[in-house]
Length: 107
Image 1 (cartoon, rainbow, N blue to C red):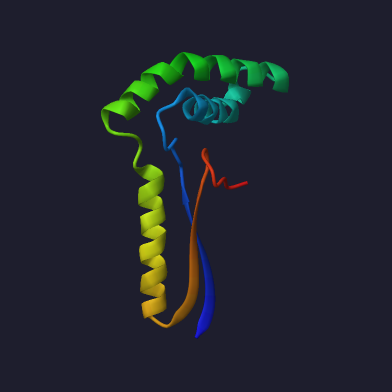
Image 2: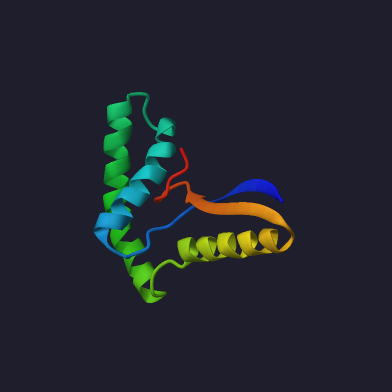
């Protein structure tokens, strides 16, 4: 049996529509794109926080309307299904899911 490791990557979304989860999520997104606005890292971080705090209430409401984001759970289920399929084909496989903007993070 061959040994195999697979990492399933996804965007990632907050698993709960709370400001404690949504604001940092949005902040990471805005910070990644902050280079478009300012060269100073501190100014980019401050602007990312401002944008996140302004956008968070609307996004939290959208998540509440749909019962929370299913994205991370779906990615985890896909990873589990892939691991089962690989094992059924004779591979000693471990499949993990990781996300760009929510935990568990991809570097």
